[in-house]
Image (cartoon, rainbow, N blue to C red; front, side):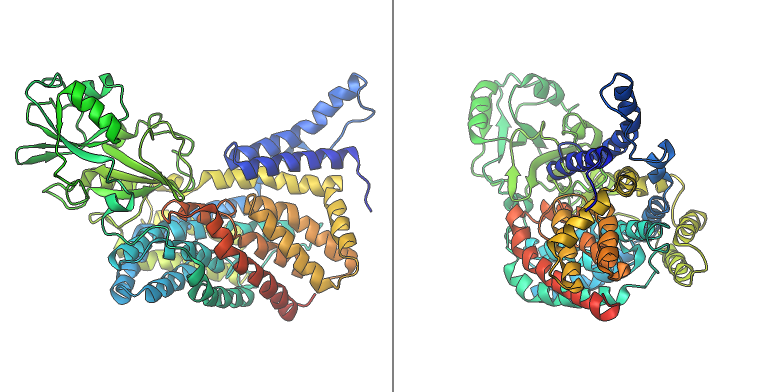
Length: 618
């Protein structure tokens, strides 16, 4: 077995620290990845300083050079993933997926089985050709609308949406950033010297898609909980009955003559003024400049105790006979003023609060409630740091909602009527994606070059405006990739990968190669369910290669097993971005992913292992 040298010990310490930070999300994953990169770059100079003061005999080196430490930013995987984000955005801006969604809605009606089948059947193939996180972001409004219009719980459709996007990601090389990264690592001279072909593992991806779809339509459908009851009224869905009330301003109220902004600044209560009714006119945000008059009727968000307190001190009378629901909060000019807004991966609001983001003033919108998984926060929301998948119940004007829908920091869980798409560019965008796939599949161009050319073509053809390409890229994913790639290099350079491979081989000494293959799949899958999928593939591809070499097995098969395991994390919401994305909109609990995803993970472990053995051998 390889020795534990100082370099190996340092690399293991960095890995352990990274795994803890990835699992706990104490800081964003891209910040953790940057920390990994910086830590590796500091090892040699810091250890050199220790040598000079007599604390070490020799400096410790885990990277060949500082250039190797920042090589992730110049990696073909990083550049390819960046270009694929732009390609995905070009397709999204045409509105083709939304058009497809409307046709599907007309077909499915209120049949839950049809809705489920359509959701899986659409997101899977799409995820094979555009980033699967982007596919879920595009389809989330469609699926949510399907659920509401068909009187189905969104919970029954959103976990399948996430899982099916992972199935689709296994169909092609460009389906996920994980595939692209694994291919880039595999192509290094110290490994196989070549990457994956565009459709090299499509047959296995199709097998998993069929097995996964059958599971979700049968056992998975039974196991998927109905956390959010079917409800056409969003106030009922968020259980706002005890938190939304109407009050009228009395003649003797001290608030008369003050602006709403001044009143809200001076009132030291957890209360929001949601809507103002003055005679036959209804006003919503921006309410700040409005001067309060006697007889004004306000819809307010607060709890009962606070409401009673402010009504006594501020001269307000409750109107208990009026039930404030979604129809009550609609304006006469437009029916849609209340929507769910989801915080997507890559949003600039991650880690911000409603106060620090200046949400109300910036977007002329009021947040009535926040749902995180199965928990709904209806009071003191202003100082809660926002996370991926947080779902906000927002009240705003149609113009403000349209602005929110156009903003890349939000995903509106429902189609906005007046959103404009470049439908005339649909054939062009699809042609560009087809050309990228075609030239890469025929090896006419490397995938990185083809993807970059396609990204440029999206702009030149008018599918995207130049300024939109920067919003299209999920920069946290790019930084994550760039930060963790040097960790794989450090594992190889230090001998840490060889040591881990020895441990795997020794622990499975009495097992046949196919069982070791399955063991590596399970280990990678468990790791991916706790940390980032890209971090998992960086850690495990070198181990898989070393393990295969030691037992005389097919290294390609072992690397492919690790790649597929890292692309399919079903058992936790944090294991894959799409799982976390649907966590809030579906109202799920952490245990729901274990309940639905656990059997599926086991099924995929068996299917992937046997499928690889049958198609490529072990």
